Amino acid sequence: MDEEREDWDDRERNDEVSDLVDRLRESYNPPPETPREEMWAAVEAALEGRAGAGARRAAQVVSLDARRFRRGPGSRWVAAWAVAAAALLILGIGIGRVSVRAPGRPAAVADVPDPTAMRLAAVEHLGQTESLLTLVRADARTGRLDPQVGPWARNLLAQTRLLLDAPEETDPTMRRMLEDLELVLVQIVGVTDTGTHDVARTRTELNLALKGLEDRDLMPRIQAMVPAGSGLSGTE
Amino acid sequence: MGDHAAFKALYDRNVDRIYRLAYRMAGGDDLARDVTQETFLRAWQRLDQFRGDAAFSTWLHSIGVSVALNELRKVDRHRKRERPLEDTAFVAPASPRLDHEALERLHEAVDELPEMYRTVFLMHDLEGYSHGEIAVVLGVAEGTSKARLFRARAKLRESLGDAMQEYA
Image (cartoon, rainbow over all chains, first blue to last red; front, side):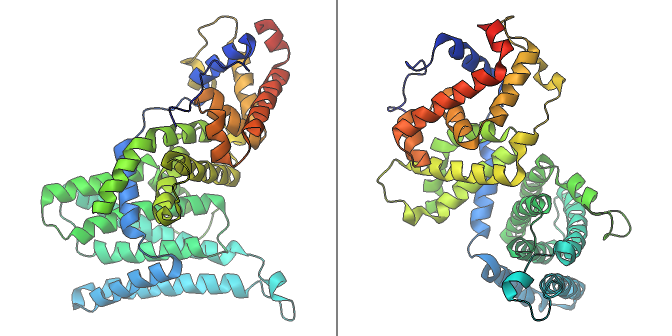
């Protein structure tokens, strides 16, 4: 492409416009240095996490979790929580679909998205995610990953993807947050999948994941959408 | 892992231009990163669709511009962009002829350009893409790219009005 690039001062541009363009080149959304490595870390993590697609992908993650939950009684509370959260999520999706379906009306009309139930499920989901991220932050400081983090993060990742795949979730702010969340969760799952007990490595990899969290201002955005106490009110 | 290593090489070769263009279009780091990352992810998923009848970088840019435009349509960020005065103070014009206020108006005028003109303007005038490249990336004729650039510049001149006359 570089060989084909035309001279910047091509014949079309008169001097008057040329000066303006020069000013704009300096001042209009001037790009900073490319954050190459950070973006590659996110791309690579997502490549690892995007083996499948949509619900199939989410189902794989959930079924993997189910196998892990059977390993011992220590993780029973995680399993119980996961079942409850998944039920809430599915309920939310179901309510979102059913609540707008008036009897006797054609499906195409009845399927008008009603985001209320989805929003409730999503806000609840964000509240759980905030708890996980707080735990991961603490683990990043010690370099010792709580064994519950892995299955928990996988489950939240699966649910994040379910929410993203749900047609009822049309709010761009929420969708964008879920997309950001997906990337961070993929990175955390990636760290837990390595199964390393190397404290320094775990700390480094968790910090990398958390950097993505901070770069995207994810925690303040989550906190803004999940009011303290209720968890379900006061959203946009 | 070998595939990832090869893909990393392609990433290294192209990421700067993709990110720069995304940043120009998006006006912020978060969205530019999202667009860049999503571009490479989609490229990875569609590698089997790359037929080699255009340069890889051109194909990649086609994906990138499409992702960027879709994202911008969703958030409509470039039209709601707020640019506090202090943010632009550091790029105060070297030329005293174009004052700060006029520069702000110029930025707003670029924001307000119709999408098809703005994209060509940013690609050609600010990021140095050739009309040939733009034509392939956007899937239009080279003449269309030139026409859009001409109209974009005309609209900028028009929207600046008096400031442009003072500046000229």
